[in-house]
Image (cartoon, rainbow, N blue to C red):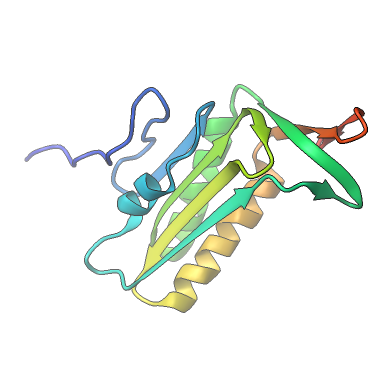
Length: 155
């Protein structure tokens, strides 16, 4: 019996945690949403939902010029746990990647992807995954504001 093929990912940017059900990665380089979609999509799935969290130019009325994301050393394990929980709850293949380091407005900070036979379950699982990541994974961001000030979010 041959080993399952790994998704087409650059190993310098991310790695597969469990190649048959979930993919979770923390990366210092730009995220590849297409690779996550390729991982979750199978011939049995008719719905593919991918969320991209993009750095915006404002937060609660403040002008934002850039962000720095910092992750706890175990953040990738927490991210994999989130993917695993959604996979086990739904029976679907799940993938997520979070970027760390310096990002500017327009950069993608988070990608979450889920494929399912039908759209309703794909949308619900992707929303569940993103919500779980936001409250569970120890990643913090420092916002660089247009006035030169900085502030930490998520500590």
